[in-house]
Image (cartoon, rainbow, N blue to C red):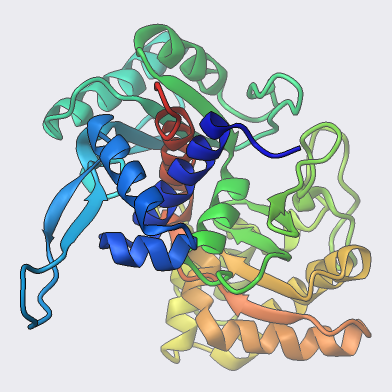
Amino acid sequence: MPASPSTARAINDRLALRLLQQDGPLTATQLKTLTGLSRPTVADLVERLQGAGLIEVVGETGAERRGPNARLYGIVADRAHLAGLDVRTDSVAVVVADLLGVTLAEATLPIGSDTAVDDAVEQAVALLERTARAAGTAPLHSVGIGAPGLIDPVTGELRDTTGLPAWHRRLVAALQQRLPATVLVENETNLAALAEHRVGAARDHDTFVLLWLGHGVGAAVMLDGKLRRGASGGAGEIGFLPVPGTIGTPSAVNCDGGFHSLVGSAPLVELATAHGITAPAGGREPGGAVALRAALAGEGDSETFLDSLADRLALGVAAVASVLDPGCVLLSGEVGHAGGDALAARVEERLAKLSPLRTEIRAGLLGGTAVLRGAVLTAREAAQDALFTPGA
């Protein structure tokens, strides 16, 4: 059954807006070429989108030819303002951006473990409000939040997870009450995978696994361009994976004895110290990232340290590869980013000896910023879904 005229217009409008968001600014002729629509149809949609305040003339082509230059159309960036939050166990980072994802203001606030729940929530909410004011924005349209822990796949809410601060769950509810905005929460590692897929190291892969290596360890599964969260939202809780080389086994409430005990930041600091590499723990940056940079700079018994670390990482990656066969695994987070191509190559070499499945190992490009980038992308998509609809 053919689409009705109004449905066809809506489809064409959304297609043109997506192209302008991804590739713009564009001329009407370029829109015609990219969409395959007729010249009159493109002229109608340009007029319609301008009337809705979604696009505007942002310049002219510079081609030298007779007659007037063609107008360049672009998304009205300040049509909506967005925010992304990276909520860690001891801090909150905020970015405020426009509809094109351009950063307008950003801020970070440490939150001590001895801070009362109500105080922690108020500090985090106030940080977002101050940052939005500093950006000179109107009320925020959408807010994306990345947080550790499990997201309920039915309700979309952050679940109460042992070992994580109680203020995390309270923060989401507080933002929903205080802001006239759509508030979305997602597991931090999933957001990192989204960012690496859209603007990072996995742009050419729709199927891959991201291994997050920071203060803790986690994984995100991207299959056919879609995040897979699992029946309970727990897909990728690789810190609980039983592996050889640990003392004991993990439990339902504690990942000690699992993969986390091999490649979490604290075990990496211990490994580095044993090899004469200085890697202080307790700073804002994971000690494992500090150790890796020191080892790559030649400090201590660096070759043996890097080999040992690659051996540890390959154990977890081999388990992932044997179950999912993703073809590509990213080493992301601050530690994966610090290790770079040198660490990735070592892990890939060892993995080839453990698994018959060909798996490329890459270093993530975004490092510790991946969660914030993913949060902003999530907020932007929510805003676009709402605004890139006739009558919105």
